[in-house]
Length: 90
Length: 547
Image 1: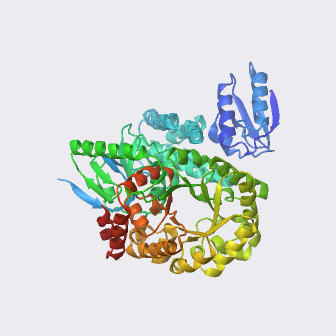
Image 2 (image 1 turned 90 degrees about the vertical axis):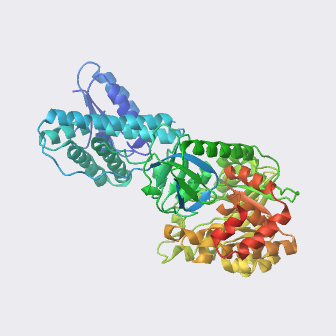
């Protein structure tokens, strides 16, 4: 299964504004994307509550997974988003 | 037949319209057995969808981008599919819709609480979303400030900053609260938005939603059950007065030309445009705390210079009275380690901080001096919480040593007011902080709503102390200002001028009405009014003299 391991780049972590931007992008992806941190259960990347509940801070490593047509492209663009500092991107 | 409720007017003006109460969070009803799980789920889903839709509408309406963003993030949470899955599972297990929603939120609540930090603070958001969905299910108004889509007077027990983040001034035309005082959040918000407001008005929450009320933010009276024609006439008349006042320009003066400087209270350069719009003649209180809040260490010299320079530049050619750091009591600062004072309001605050950390004051004065030398503003510096001649002398020496030309002290402690004449031997001006002077004169905590009547700025004892300062200023020809919230009351302004006050500093929005109020009286009238107000037996009688 296509997988990307990314380090969260946003200075406030995967919270508030960065989480909203990421979740909205994941909801637009043509495939179902999951996100997990460490060995915890993967959760849907388009679920705001689940993504917030990861409690990922700047520097936390998270793993994105998806399957199906367009999975690689979707993961690439989401991984790029996660690696950026979305707090700085106003 | 109309009934009259009386509270304390904290922001002048008339508001007429239907009263709506801020809704409380609903209690979870007793569980009921579910016979049709599919129908129950449809009900739950519709309630969540309504919460999402309402947050979206509020976000569309919000004028502040940050507020809109927060509301949209909350909408994403309420519309979360994992949440809906959780609700469905709980309904399949036999729970009714309200309990299923409560249970589904509880799962995330636990995860948020366990994560700590930022997420733990978001637990309140989850609770709010749950309360909203449960209210929809029960057919109750959603908790929080109503948004009926038409103008109304908002009634609440008290208002917290969270309630009012996206308060829509197009809809909310007046505020009335059961508790609170002249310095409560409700009062400060009302003055910032220019909303007529009455606080400490018991009975306000007993008025049924939709009843037409006529609220007078000067007298503190709320007439309940007036007919619509009368309400409309009163609102029209008030709008005309407000339009006349906001259109007033030029320096403040009485009808016979006695000048009273009308100045603005600002916290940073961001507030300067509003001050300009109100034709403020300068800044009478530049609060410097903003720069220091939430800091583990004091801001560096350069950062302070930049912040002060921004305001001085924007006010070039005009007076800027800058107050040195007013930390402590309700504004504790982490880097000063003030934890553990048994009674912070009576502790090491304001200038008293310099006893332990003189370097903080020295650095701040150096920054003010540097910023002044780079701009053309007429910079005056004053210290908060001064009680004695010795403190005033030390402060003035420090100000002059820093190369600054004008030193003054705030009068917030009765001891300082009583010795105003002595203080004026060593400083160039006085500025009366009426909020704290009330609190310390009446031994009544500013945050204690039950004592709001004691904090009424019309209390004759308070006016008498202001008069002592005014007399001291007149005797030596030195300026005496008022920069507390009392300065923004158009009824009180002529009284203060009559007591010898030479400048009034307030929220920019209040300047127009105060200018108009002063222009309606001669200086001799102000003096007569002041003498009668000081002689009045109580605050209500003093206020009646001016109406």
